[in-house]
View 1 (cartoon, rainbow, N blue to C red):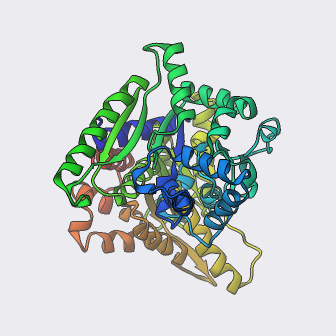
View 2: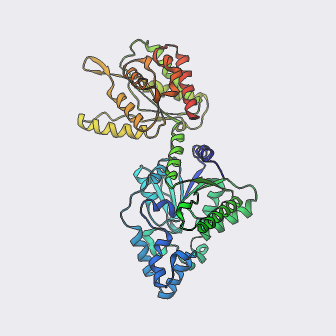
View 3: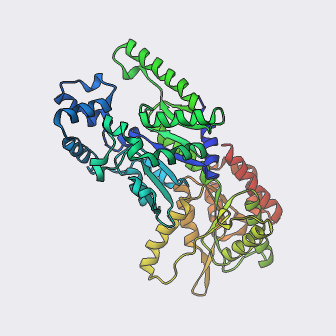
Length: 470
C-alpha cells in the first residue's frame, strides 16, 4: 500500500509530465445519485426469484434475464431510466475535469465525466463505439473512452454474458487502445471494484507481455470498517477479502491507496489539484506610476522575478495589467528563448482583459474572468496596483478583487508591500492576522520595506519553496 501523501506527490508529478490518466468506475457516480450495478439489476433479480444481495455474478443475472425474456428490451429501458435522471456532477468529478488530464476511461453508462468536462470549458472527444475511434475531434482537450457504452445507446451497452463474450469481436479496438494507455500512462482507478472481466483480461495480457517492466498505477480503496457490518464475522470476512485483492493487484503494478471515508476521495483529489496549481503563479498588478520606485528599478524587479520563477519551473499567468504585464511578457519570452525551452505555453499564459465593455458589463465580466484565472493558480503575487481615475492615481480595485478571490480559492498570497498602492493594502491586511501567513513571517520586513531587488525576488522564491512542503 502507498501512503496517501506519497501518492499525492507522485501522481501530481505524473500529471505535470502529461503521463496521467483516469479510470472511473460506478462508485464515482454513486455520490451523484446514480445506482450501482446491484441496484440496477435488483428488480430484474426479483423477477428471477433471486436475491441480488447474495449474488456476485451480476453479468450472469443480466444474462439470465435476457434468456428468460428472449430479448433485452426491459434491460435497455432500465439503463435509460436509471441513467437519464437529473443528477449533478460531484465535487470529485469537477476536480478531475479541472486537472490537466487528457485521458479518461470509464465503464459507466452515465455522462457525468463528459458533463463536468464541458462545465469546465474543456472540448471533449467521446468514444462510445468502434466507429468513433477512427474520427478525432480537432483541438480536443480530453478523450473519454466509454468502454461499456453509453446511456444514449442502451441497446449496445455491455452488460450481459453475451456482451462480454463477444467483446473482442465487437469492441476489440477499445481493448487495444486501453492496453496502450495502461503501458504508457499512470492510471488512478476511482470507484472501481476490479471485478470486471474485460479489465482483468487486459491487465493479465500486459503483465504477460511486459513482465516486471510495468507502469505503476494507483487505486483508491475505502478501508473495510466494522460499523458497516451487523456481524463481526462478516466484517472479518470482508477485511480478509479486501486485503487479498490489494495484494493480488500488485501483480499488475496497481498500488492501493487507502482512505477512511468516501469523502476522502474528493479531499485527495483537491490536494492533488492544489499541488498542481502551485506550479501556476498569477502575478497581479497594474502601474500607472511606480511611486517611490524608479521605472528602471520597477521593471528590473518584474523582469528578475519573472525569469527566476521560470527557472524554478513555474508557469506564469498574467492578466496583462498596465505597466506590469508587458514587462512580464517581454522578460519571459526572452528568457524562454535564450534557455531554448521548446514550449512557451509551459511557462507563460497571457489572459488579457476585454476593454470594449460598458461599465455594467465590465464589472460582471471581469469578476467572472478573474475567478477563472485565479482558479488555475495556487500562488498569487501582488505588485504595485494603481490606476488613473480622471486626473487622480488611485488604488486598483481590480487588484484588490484578485486578492479577495485568491483568499477564497485558498491560494498562497505573496504581497510585495514595499511597491505600495493596492499591494501595500494587501500586505497590511494579510499581516494583521499572523496565523494566516506563517510562511511569510520570516520575510515580513523584506516584503514590507526592502528595495533590494535580489533580496525581494529570492525571498519570494523561498516562500514558494516552503509552501511546497506544507
